[in-house]
Image 1 (cartoon, rainbow, N blue to C red):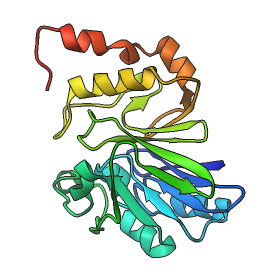
Image 2 (image 1 turned 90 degrees about the vertical axis):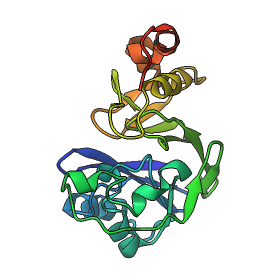
Image 3 (image 1 turned 180 degrees about the horizontal axis):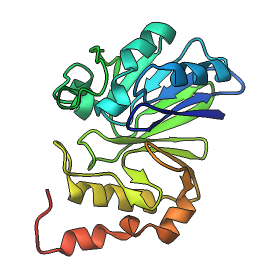
Image 4 (image 1 turned 60 degrees about the vertical axis):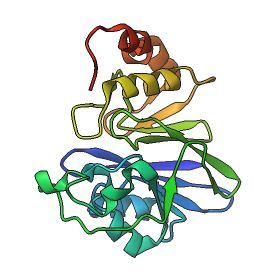
Length: 220
């Protein structure tokens, strides 16, 4: 599987394309805006038709370009059911409060949940529900790669102070990722790429579940 990346929009969102080498089927992971950088990534990958548009969560800086991308390349729009309304409601995806980019509502084709499996050719993409940044945040596991959205960053984690966020849930999600067997290349929603081995050794938030459960002050 080949992975292409573009840093798109004012919030410097990492957007990705996955292309299966055998079947040539392709999937997008997040689309902040469908701008020249995004279209250049499609051209580099030689992708004109998508099988999936996979969304790690429903915030505006990950979904504002989805409708335009679908119009241009097709693709089954997939988002966790708990964030599904973000694709049609600019207040729920917070774009109404930021003026980030023009937003066109786009209905989901598939509402994802824990354990769902998608295929690019014979390559399996597994859905992990990792709530905390939003109620419907997910990570995608595919062929030794983890697309972590805004759940896990290099040496950091996603914010939890926006509607639907929960520090306690995010700590639990990070502990789950930290307990995965084997190493994974990690492609986050913002910032530098990393690996699970590196984060297990260096990211204190992956070891925060005990702190979250024993801290005397309740979390959001």
